[in-house]
Image 1 (cartoon, rainbow, N blue to C red):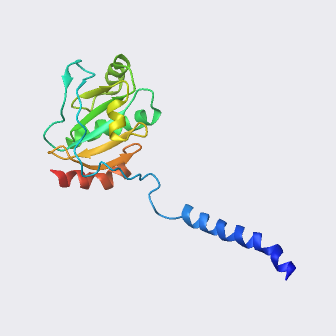
Image 2 (spheres, one colour):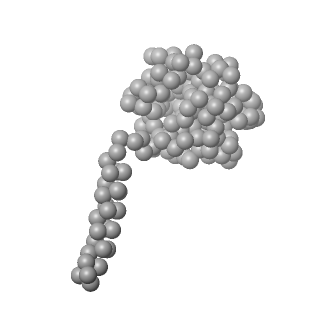
Image 3 (cartoon, rainbow, N blue to C red):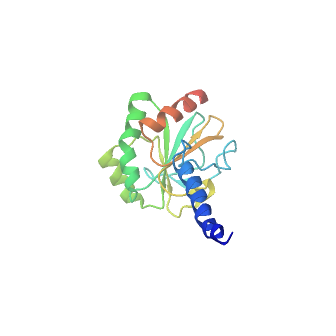
Length: 173
């Protein structure tokens, strides 16, 4: 009986290792973090646009992607070409939120890499991002024509992600 007790820690370790391995190898989307804002209105805001400095307080009354980005974000740079492609080739309407960034740097970035956005909301202190539950840039929200948030994606948009989000976005039209 005493020799059997020596194997109990090993058995527990093996069981935990098996659970961890199963979880690691599951097909579950590990980037999915549910947002409590799904199905709720986009937060109200009065902020300036990056492009003109004029105040804005609403999104267009049509389905849009709202993309949270920043010049300091390397992943945002990686996704930017795909956003340009969505806007130019598929006519996808995108509103940007320039998150915790400098407007001058944002203008230079858009001039250098192209501007896929209808307009960019300047959020230098991250207050709008906080209200949206942003973890960091990039993040993208699907917002319907009534201003209701229908989906959220954390990370860069690319062909693989768009194969899932694209049909959801098209269903909003």
